[in-house]
Length: 510
Image 1 (cartoon, rainbow, N blue to C red):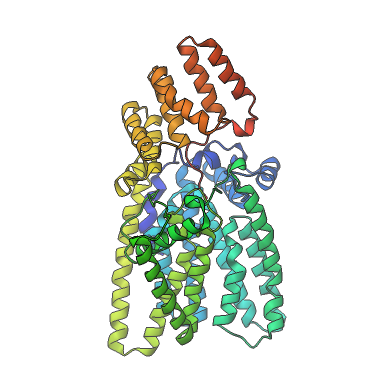
Image 2: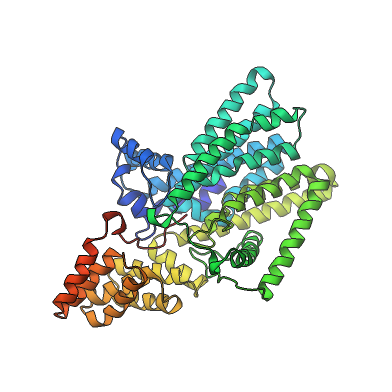
């Protein structure tokens, strides 16, 4: 794993992101400051950024005990989780397909693909890398349970179920494991009867159902979660939009040169050229996958893993962000398995010269992936570098300009921040965070309340319960001597319960 360490090593010198979840999860979260009974109780009885993920919070407590608030220590834990997951991918591929070369290539594809950088280099994505480690432990133990004699099978089964429950307590996306187990039974059949194959999934399904219900509740906007309305206002529009998104995801995997902290994928209200082309490509991919399942069912398993991994982020339950690099972290397990299993199949069936060519091509591809990941890690150095890179890669993404404006404001670069936020407003005039930030700069930093007031009025019309916006509006009225209007704004702000009073600096991450 030396290559993995080299690709990610400079992330250890990075800091926390000041305006994107790291403050809510770690820097401004007293519950992670050391391991105490009260802190552990808080982790298991509270929601953080709209997520019920107690083991994520407990893992931050362990980091704090070791490193205090040094971001490099927290990132090191992310990196260790990611590297350990790569080892489990290797063991899983070696057990299911045999052969070390294919297993090693698959593990390195999982570890080194640059789409994985967001999950590893961002402290707040601890839930992703830790959940994957536990997910793989559960899957690996289940594979061993299927292979062991009756005297040992029970222990492996218990280990698999226990690891799965821990994964669920880290991130709800792991609810897909029962579907992966069903796909495993279909693609790697055993002599066990159907009663056993169905019955041993029941505890997994019950645990997954409980966490799924809890996630739907916790992700509601009223609790700070990332659940939103359908993109374009309807399920049909969302499905059309996701057709284009899925093709973008496929492009990012096959041609990994374009990554960003935010993407400007507009929603689709009808079938245009992009949707038609996307649908045709998806249909062709589906037919190829069906053909692979018929001819090489073991390789087809990994295609099913990709599809299952995409299901939670397919916007059937719509989330506040349409697409992200981190949404591919779990589907990349299937991509890695397909790469490793495919290479192993070539090694078994092909002539020596073709085997040599396949191994040489794999080595070159992995070297390129490592270089691209090294470059992408540098993007995550701090909040300004992250969002400045995003504005270059996705200049039509309002979130990128909002993030850059907020980051520059934290540095005291008010004029540059204002320019970035104005660009965000131009792209998305109805964004509440942008309206608040513009109102704040004009009112508090530049002492120009009349220039900031239109933004604050627009904000409080969009969200009459935005307490911070109402308070700032009251300040604006006071500065121009409009005392009655100020008193009314302050009265409305005080009437809002405290949980609704704290504005989130950026859209929460799912």
